[in-house]
Image (cartoon, rainbow, N blue to C red):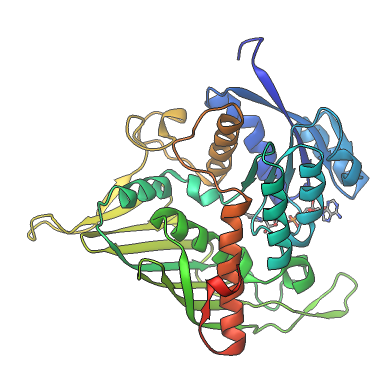
Length: 384
Ligand SMILES: NC(=O)c1ccc[n+]([C@@H]2O[C@H](COP(=O)([O-])OP(=O)(O)OC[C@H]3O[C@@H](n4cnc5c(N)ncnc54)[C@H](O)[C@@H]3O)[C@@H](O)[C@H]2O)c1
């Protein structure tokens, strides 16, 4: 960085899982990427003063605050990064937009479609403020390459999309958390996991979901233990599966579960087209599988592409020598780099989702729950 490099002062709202992932990303990005803006960790905002002080010191924030309402509007803050539970995305986002700040918000955009719509509309009403949503899997090099190959027509017309995001941490021994409370989370595995694979499918194909043809929503663990030993009612799903049709006519299936024994964090997207297929599995995240239907039948089969070639693969040039793999945290760091590029007037190789884009994913999620509850197909146009 030269002395003239402009800074991007960041206020982070929330300080646990994603708080750590994002703080690490804001710290690391300028060390690996040449960026037009240098992130500065200005303020971290949380509710608990003691853990806040420890977090602030560990990650090197200049200040800490337990009052998000004034902290996100403070002079000198350029961007507000929101990593709170889903019901607490809207408040800080609206306040930040009204104060002229840029906003980077965790997914899903909000706990309800109405709140997501208000956020989308507020972003549109403040065009000088840029918005970003942390659909971080777009920024795995293999998913970014999948997007490029499909957009180049390498698999022909998309016919069939299969998204599956399975975890296994949600058994009856897992205590009550905000993630099991509809008022805080909006939904369970659905908004947590299907949100990612719906975003990935929309991103890779460049197409939108037209109709949810059918869906199942199930809650198997109906109550969970609170910290005081009492039992609380679970008000979200454990598993949601649904079938969808895209505008192109492509068919799709999506499934999310927190009760899939043996699947720890299995985020899989496979797309079959008229000329070939592509497949990503986060448990093997440096690899993109590609089948080219034009290959000689004697040698036709899935290719295993290590997406670590600096000259060819998205993001690879910023990291290690060719063939040295990257991990979960790099998706977030790649996203910080792209945010800094956009705000510095550059166009990143991999497009970033904004509030309007994330609203489309939220429409699909809401349409799937509506289809499950009413037992019939739902057109997404009816919810926009
Ligand atoms: N992109 C991803 O892959 C990914 C992964 C996990 C979570 N998320 C999303 O990130 C968000 C946060 O999830 P998490 O796993 O970090 O949750 P978490 O429970 O680990 O952390 C939530 C944070 O919000 C803070 N918070 C809660 N209420 C607050 C208030 N009133 N004022 C200030 N701070 C408050 C908590 O103190 C905590 O620091 C959610 O929207 C979740 O869906 C995204």
